[in-house]
Amino acid sequence: MTPRATEPRVVPRNGVPAPNEPQPVEPDVVGDTAGDCGPWQWRITAALSLFYLPSTWHMTAITFQTVTPSFSCQGYQEPTGCDQFNATNTCEKWDFNVTTTGDTIVSEWGLVCERESLINVSMMSFLLGVTVGGLVSGILSDHFGRRKTLSIFLAVQIVCGTAIAFTPWLWLFMALRFVLGWSCVSVVFSAFVLCMEVVGGARWRTVAGVSFHYPVPLGYLTVALIAYLLPAWRHLQLAASLPALLLFGVVAVLPESPRWLLAVGKRKRLARTLRSAAATNRRPFYAEQLESALPVQPVVDAANDNADKETVGMMSLVRTPHMRRISLLVYAQWFSLYLAYFGIVLNLGNIEGSIHLNTVISGLVELPAIALSTPLLLRHGRRVPLFGTMVAGGLFCILAALVPDSHAYGTKLSVGLVMMGRFAFSFPWVILPVFTAELFPTVVRNMGVGSANLAAGIALILVPNLWNLSTFWEGLPLVVLGLLSILGGASVMLLPETTKKPLPNTIEELEQMYN
Image (tube, rainbow, N blue to C red; front, side, top):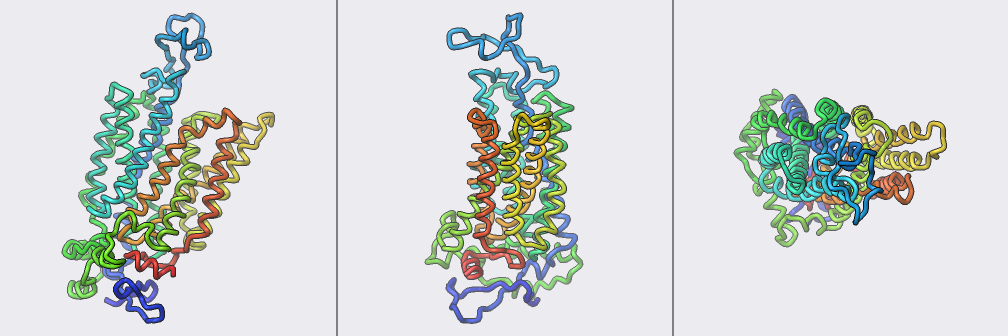
């Protein structure tokens, strides 16, 4: 089993390579045995992408569950509103007209007037769970493996999602939404990293990473249909939760990431996994050659032995110069992208038009963006497409904010520009996770992606309050989205290009690769 010259991996001596000394080349054990891509990888990629669907439902369902129906104070013959009541003249109970909207958490718990701010808190509880979960699950996944972390949090997702549909109290709804957000991001990130680690070669990593995102627009389209057919928020919650039970059948046949098994030195499980992969891909499998190609010491142990015996952990993401630069720039990009992307997706109810129709349009514009991302990435790499689409999306948002209300087609033009921005943001939504996973080495890959999610989570926490800026100027939220997206896109050009480069296993390999 000979190493491929197209993707050499340099092995430093004791973690400190001599500057002018030729270095030995480590073979890509996984790729050389299983192949870069074949039926085995495609089946796993298709199966893993299914885990994105229920998470998308849970993320988007809250926009339908928090719709405010028309209301008036009980006992009043004439329609009443919040401005007719104050601290001394309060309404004891509100009547809601749920004929067209169905029961929502707003009508169930009276979240209007002085209690209206609790709607944002309800949305933020899920997003706060996403913030914490992305970081913690990354650490757990790097320690216990991708498959085990995925299966555990899938169970948590189903249990919490179902329990929410039966909760009698708002505070319990918020608490369960926090855990649900934690579990959703853990499921998605574990599945995505596993997807990226079963394929080899920059070309196939691109195709697999992009294909993983196809269920996202399908999630938007189906949740709009489900919310239309089941307008009551509890019914919608059950419909978003129970289908995920079928995914346990998928978990049962999923392998563990062979690159993770290699990194932690689980040789027997690695051999079994690669034997199965080679058989499915109709490639010869030679156990003796595989054993001789494996490193004497597990990658994780070797990484820990280097850098003055420092343990691989969160501080590893900022300890060395190139790793620190990559981490901080990636955090800035995730923050700006999540604020822009979800600033539109989770505020579709604040945009003119039907919330169901806007959600459907949001899903439809994402489908071609995902399809076009693959040839775009293969031809132009990661940095240029990421830079161009984030800047373009930002400009569309700013233009939408500047459309005058007096314009004859002002509303349609503004919504059209927002959807163009939504279309542009769909590209970095697909590209950035692929780029991030390629930038971080195996020993901290899930941790790196998870820590990037911490920055994204901070942006998500701000999203529910974003449209409050419209009290100063109606177009201000879109201008903020646009400017931050442009700045995030510009910072991309400070990162190294990862196209046609191997995935680094250790931080030392990364430092040498970009030195």
